[in-house]
Amino acid sequence: MPMNGLKISGVMEIKGVLLDTSFFIRLLNEKDPLHGNVLGYFRYFLEKGITLKMSTIAIGEFCVKGELNELPIEKLQILPFNLNHAERAGKLASIVYGLKDALDLPDRKLVSNDTKMFAQADVEPQVEAYVTSDERCLKVVDLLKQHTSLNFLVINLRIPYNETFGLLDVL
Image: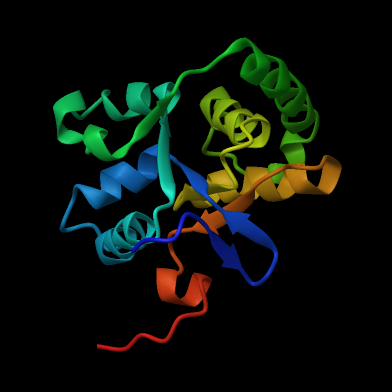
């Protein structure tokens, strides 16, 4: 019987996660180098009864090259971008734009979509973690953490789920 939540290192109980676009791109591409990691997280979250959320913003990003019917919609809660998200996104974007030189991301424009999804993770009480493999996105979150408090953990898909959750990899 799945439990409804999980503690990571005794820090926070995770009952829900917000999955970014990179999660789904890698989940659906068996040739992607991180496919195994992402599939491990996906199965683990489902097994533990952790609510999987996808932002309408991530759906829009995914549909640039993918189709909506490719997504495992039946296993997801769709999170629309609302007024409270917009207000927090503005505050976070202000911090990011004010510190953009510290990001050292010359090849990337500061994408407001990342900041909008961070705002959703920050505002939504049912979201305890933001899940991504995007290293540039991780840099932005790290910068934000230095200048404001964020109400979510970040799970890096480049780290296998068993390492993140402190599990032995037993076959």
